[in-house]
Length: 320
Image 1 (cartoon, rainbow, N blue to C red):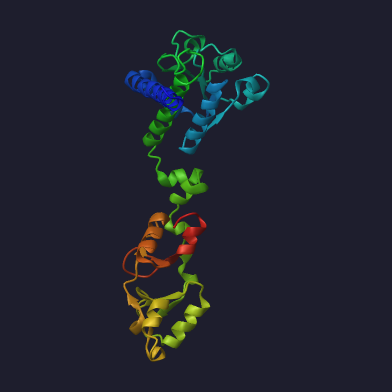
Image 2 (image 1 turned 120 degrees about the horizontal axis):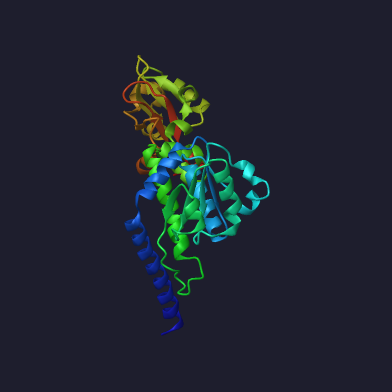
């Protein structure tokens, strides 16, 4: 077997072992998972996640996922907890302590603190008879399937199972709370993900900033309105103020001969494309790209325009 073949065989073995372990974890979920969720939902404070070593790294991710999906949470390092950070744990909180063996000595003071002050404790471990699990009020048991290294010493399968358990908790809680994409954006406004969840109403220009003329406006005045604006267009309304058209550079070029002899209503493109204010801005960018236009009126249906979404607004936040 070549070196490359050996590398690939090892990688496939690790991934296969972890995938099988995840199947075992899913099949073995029991009432302990439901009891953990009920305990977390009863918290009037925060979910305090703690663990040492690789369990601590996974714990930080679990706390971050909980916090970004509607469950207030933060990570407390167990060693720092023993040196003053126990003051970060208070009545109303629920502690999630993670230890694959269930015997991490660094967690002892935190566990004792929860018992002393009646703070609910959830234990996450692969050993049901461990000190942690005996002390805990609720139990998350991951199957003890060894590690993918084959020697039982490199946290691989155990950390994968712990991470998956944390994800399962976070998603179950967010579904119970009906936590949707628009809520997620409140906690995650930055980056590509935040941009994808941005609503049209968050980016649109209010109608007061958009050039608008009526159907009977002479084109000389319409051109002046376009020049005063920064969008390269003007909207056109009927006598009642309802949006009926748009005049762009393309419309002007098509009517360049005798342009000033016309009214806005004679030059405009009728029924311009529009989008609702509560739609995702990403959908607006897709409409503009497909139609090869740069502006999209924001409306709630037939009637007045509420604002304007410009392609530059989408590009500014990473869409388009």
